[in-house]
Image 1 (tube, chains in turn brown, red):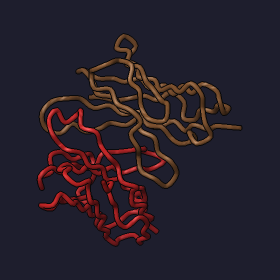
Image 2: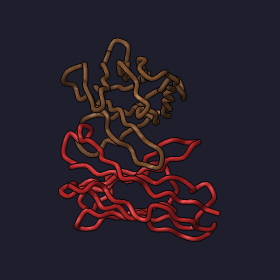
Image 3: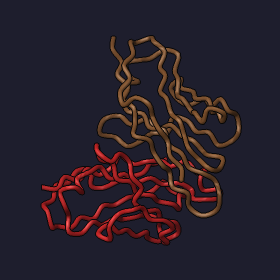
Image 4: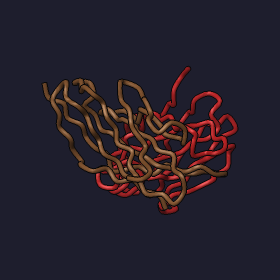
Length: 115
Length: 116
């Protein structure tokens, strides 16, 4: 079975500081990994995805993530936080193959950005 | 192009009632998945439909059911509502091709159900 672990239910940063949200995955087969963001009273929006191409993945809004197989990690980073980045972030894993492969989400990390 | 549309956005029901939620996927998307989001359990997979067939189902009781129509629109139904069914129900659509894991899910804004 696949799973993801997001370390830290809340992360606080100052505006302009580095954002680092941690995600570790468990998968018996090569995984596909995703980061989604959820703003209050909204659905989930895709930030970026890893599907076995480049290990450094660039997403929207200046976010990027690096797939590290040796560490089973897929941490999300952004060099400089903006107030508008305050939201909840979800890491998710699935796998390839025929048929349907469900997306398994982590418990989420709420990012707080202070002025 | 239009995104994933879920209706209604908010609804309040009482225990024992039933509820039907609707999801219109992005045009051309044939796969629709449903997730339940609660503060305690997080995001949990309910079921997925592709070309009117349920391909997979999560670990939910039989009170939770769904269907998909020929135009890919989907509905989910919850019968005999319980207080614990209060949640945000999210629908997501994708192309549904193979490998399915590479398909990106596009989510709707959700239907927030409150059971009193």
